[in-house]
Image 1 (cartoon, rainbow, N blue to C red):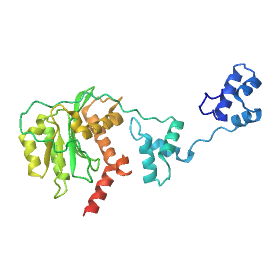
Image 2: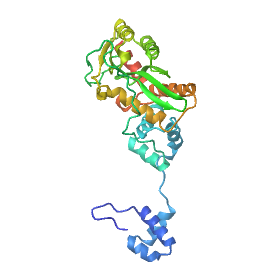
Image 3: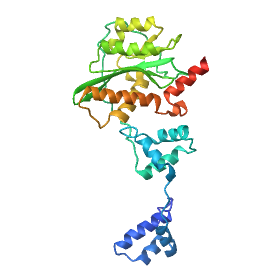
Image 4: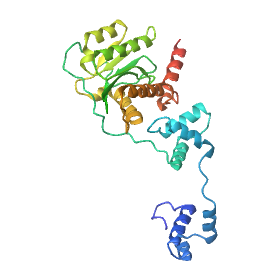
Length: 303
């Protein structure tokens, strides 16, 4: 039971548990204690005084925050919520330790994509240069944005989400959920986007070269309302990496391991998740604020 050469020795509590297990299997206790270099008094003390749980007063609250999403949330999300809402002084690693003790583990991000939807049909309309150039950094909201379409395969068929993601505030500022990735979906998304746009803002809106982003109605609506259009190079998903990353988080936190029997039920749940993303889900890059909190704070400071 000694530690390997150069390794850390086991704590007395762990040694005592190992000795107790082997003793219960019929091994001589005196020999086991000698092998473990553990005094008999230390052995009995360790068994009688189990290690106290980390911050037990916070466990109910941690469980509540973790359970907000079907696949759970990570320890950083829990820690930011405790600090921002409850005023608790606590480190991320302490929350991680608590969650490990409680058996709370969210899913690990998958390396594979989720059958990425491809709307490229060649140059069927007007195309634009890549103004973003993979520089997704923005000092504030309504400066740089990205859009794309992602597909969900479900029991009732397929569903599609077309969001607009603000690179500065990390907010999904507009979206449309539909069973058809058609122009009507883009028109619904644009209506929401234009209604939300602050007066005087001239953001860059980046997309791939999908047919809908080349369509005259889409191009015209953006131009008339002060948007600068930007497009990824053909067949290069990294050029739209910021929006693809949102899809990865969304499908891991909301979609993975779940199914819906009706489009209406799926749409209602996805709408709720988008509200959670914007209003509840705190982000490290926003210094613990939610996207809506960051956007409102930034616009107040700019006024």
